[in-house]
Length: 214
Image 1 (spheres, rainbow, N blue to C red):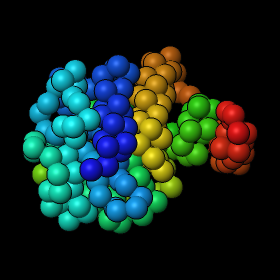
Image 2 (cartoon, one colour):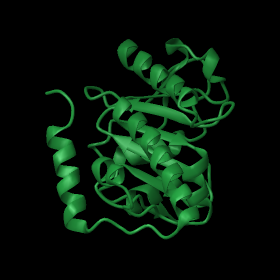
Image 3 (cartoon, rainbow, N blue to C red):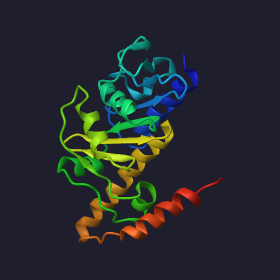
Image 4 (cartoon, rainbow, N blue to C red):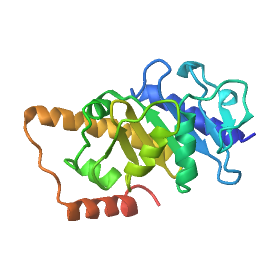
């Protein structure tokens, strides 16, 4: 089932270590099929180099196994909660990328100090409250606190990104780490100034409407 989505989710997962966002087997990518509503997610504890599209696990939105020989990611309840409460979301990524997770560790959002943050995120990257791993609590906090952003830092935990498709969520995860690294180094030099909200809105709108090929 869902061979194309399985291949896409597998490819998205394999991009995480290449981008330096995960170590060993931590982190995961999932995608939702628009027609069936079924979710494809990385299996638990499988090394990225060993992943194949056939190993991706298919679940329904209530967490019931539809197809797959392996256990789904332990973060599946988080992904499924977000999908159930955000019908616009078709891809989710979770990482513990170093610089972004450093901000999560101290419970600090990332303000709009860079035009890249304005462009990609349209505002500060928020931080959500601590929530225990294993159930739906993290998903609940993501939905409660992410607002209009495509990324959130979960206190003491890591990064979650969402998107209208799998690769949009992967791109957001890459960009979160990129801007977090730059902001971290900037803070060693001094206190950056935030970009004014009207300029943030202008930059984000221009990026969405004009950047890239149409």
